Image (cartoon, rainbow, N blue to C red; front, side, top):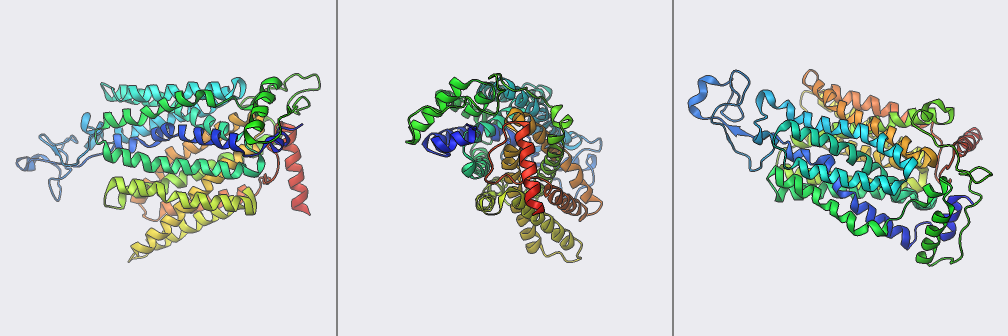
Length: 497
C-alpha cells in the first residue's frame, strides 16, 4: 500500500508522532539560536570619547559614538553599553563596523552550502544519520567560536556552523513531518514555525541574562546536548526507508507506531509501494540537476525558489526596523518573536480551510498591501508614526504566516525521492534573499520609500506566481516523479472544471 495509506491505518498523528514531533521541535532550538545569536554577539555598542580629543574627531553633535579623522575609533573611548560583543573585543567600530555585519553574511553563506549539500546526502543516506552529524557538528563549532582568539578565526568557525546548522535545520523539519499523515501535516508544519518563534523569544531572554558575548555564544550552543537524551527515541524516517526498499525496517517502525497509537497490532505491508520497481529494487535516486532537467519538477522548483527568496527578503527587510524602534533592545527582540505566533496560529486554520495555494496567495497579497501602505505613508510630509508602525507590523504578520505556508507547501510538493534536495535548493534561495536584503534597505538613504516599494512589488509577483502551483490539501505526499505529474494533472482538471 502507499505510505500515506499506511499512516492512515496506523494513525496519522497519534501518540507516537506527537512525541516524536515535540522532541524534534525542541531539539531544533540550538540551530535556531545559531541563526540569530549574532544579533547580540556582533552588536555595535555605544561609546563616548574623552573631552580633550575634540580636535581629533569628526564633526559630531556630541562626544558619543564619534570616530577619529582617520576613520578609527577615538583613543581612550569608553563603552557606555552594558554588553560585550566582537565589536568591543576587537574594536570593530567606525571604519571597521562593516565586519560585524560581514560575520552574519559569512554565516549565511555557510547555510547556502549546507542546506543543499547535507540535504542531498540525507536523501541518499538517511535523515537520522545526517541530522546527527549536522546537529552535533554545528554545536561543536559554535562552542569553539566562543573561544576564538581573533576575528578571522571567529568568522571561519561561524561559516562552518552555518554549513552544519543550515543542513541540520532542514533535515529536522523533514524528519518531523514525514511520518505525519496528510490530515495533520499542515498543522504540524506550521507548529514548527511556532517553536522557531519561541526560540527567538528564548534567545532574547538568554541574551538579557548573559551580557558577555563569549559566554552567550557557548550558552546558546550547550542545548545541543539535548539530542543525546532523545537519540534512542528518534528513529529513521520510515517513509525514506520505504523509498530505499528497506521494507523490514520501515514496517517495523510502522508496527511500533501503530501499537503506541493504540491502533492495529498486525503488520503493515509496504511491499507493493510505488517507491520500488516491480522487482523490489529501489527506484532511481535523484540529484540537484534532476530538479531542473525533469520537466515535472523544473517549474515547481523555480516557483518555489521565487517564493522562498521573496519571503526571506521581505521578512528580514521588515525585521530590520526592530532595532530602530527605540527602547530596550532585548525587549524589542523578544516581542519580535512573540508577534509571529498569532500569525502561525491563523495559518493552521487557514491551511485547513482554504488550502496551501490560496493561503499563500492571501498572505503574500497582505504583505504587498502592507508594504504599499507603508510606502505611501513614508511619502507624506507629516508621517503618522502610529499608522506606519501598525502597517509595518501587519506586514510582518502576513510575511511570517506566508513563510510558514511555503515550508509546508514545499515539503508536500517535492517527491520523497528528491524532497531534501528540493527543500535545500529552496532554502538556498531564501538565504540569498536574506543576504541581499540589507542592500535594498540601504536604498532608503537615497529614497525613504523605495525599499517598501520594492518589497511590495516582490510580494505581489510572488503571490501571482504561486497561483501556478497545484493544491496539495488532502492529497498524499508524492513519493515519485510520477506522483507529482499525477497531482499536477488532477489539479489542472479541477481548475478547468
